[in-house]
Length: 110
Length: 111
Image 1 (tube, chains in turn cyan, green):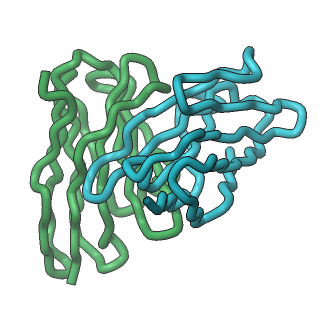
Image 2 (image 1 turned 30 degrees about the horizontal axis):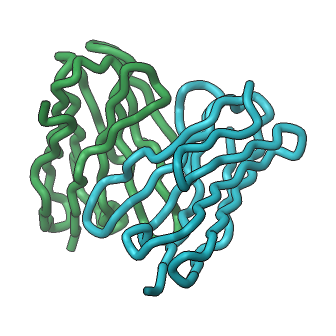
């Protein structure tokens, strides 16, 4: 089955800096790559996703890039704000079922 | 729309007890799934359903049963709880199997 590795496990940045979280996947058949944000005590919420037919997607301060050849994808958050502090999960799907990475705890210091 | 709802929010069980975690969605989604979340391990798929009457196993199905008699509801049953089932459980639904919407979760402690 699919295996997703996510790094780093924790990330601390100053407000206004950029944050980058990286994931690698194992199954070349994976064609859908969502990113979820989870705030304390809540369920994960989809923030952006990308499909295998595009290399990059952007939504305001958030962007995702995909390198199918290397089998890795990344989340980029620019101009970070304290409210961006949360746990972020990547996932990959070859067959409609999501396999998640281990999560990254992002802390944005004011 | 309420989205995806889960009950209870928190539950304490003794080893060997049984219980049902409830999940309901009002978005007319065909696809529903159950995950468990443990520290450092992300979310792992327990069971999923692609429509009423159809269920299948995920990555970690042992110790859990599901059924899907209606489009709206997808309960998760623990027949004989074990301490290893202490976790946070999330239900999710989607129109298609990819863009999933998660509920608020149920925290389960098995003593």
